[in-house]
Length: 385
Image 1 (cartoon, one colour):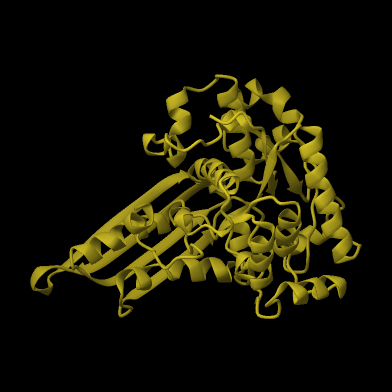
Image 2 (image 1 turned 30 degrees about the horizontal axis):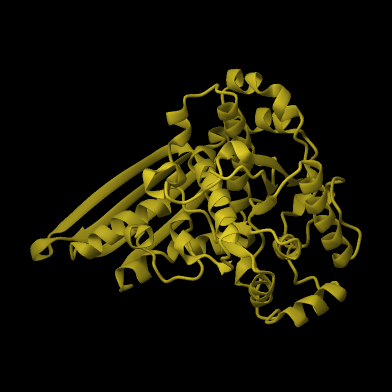
């Protein structure tokens, strides 16, 4: 195993997913949870990857940016994902983790405009320079060999990518303070300029921007995205492929979700939910090879649930002699518990990818995302193989 120290700089570090990932990893480092329970949900803990020299989660140092300056313990008490007794046992360690000031653009959630904990009020170039200094300083202060940047911020308002078709136009847009540039693009640009792999776990168009793909190629940096595949859509990639393999004809799939965390609140707004809905609705047709079926997806914000997401699915399909069959699924689980092990997997895998000389979009990481970039594979088993 490599003895490297690797930084994980997370955009939205005080959000439920990032904060839970950090707290859970510290609990494991201190031996406060069984090793087997920590491995649940993590592909990189499977024996099939033993031949690859991946870093261990104990080698990861966490930091990042947020629009509020709560330390990680305060954030954990607000997020209410992990048990209070567990949090108390790592309170001292969590208190030491405080975010750096974030950047935001008009595409971010409107409430962030009121934050006094941001780098805004300056030019885009100044914000990028500040992000680069943050990354370099974090690596230096913590004695890191490398750092990975992971975007876990709230879903941005939908935005096109056509304007930034090459790096020259992107740099000109920065100089001109072009309001079409999103915060995701600024973080990605800063990460790539600092030679850091960038992962977009959110439903944003950041890594569909041709200029950023060009920069990743120039800087020899790996990328991965987009939109983490953790629950309901993950099940679609499994059951959908089963229907295809068994030649069962899908007639309709109805899905609804209720969740009460900040992600649910943001996704209750159409302008922020547009790409998420596109990703959730877009998985079945390319997987099955046909589109003549009904497909409905709803996301409802319901505050009492907090991070405890519930998802209902009704699947109607035709069996032998066109006889109708129906399957119903009910998911109940903490959103952040589903996502956290994937974040750790991705940190390890993109760090390894860079170490062995990979660059650009990593299509073999498709099974982590609803809309995996760089591949047409949508079925879970196709992605795994």
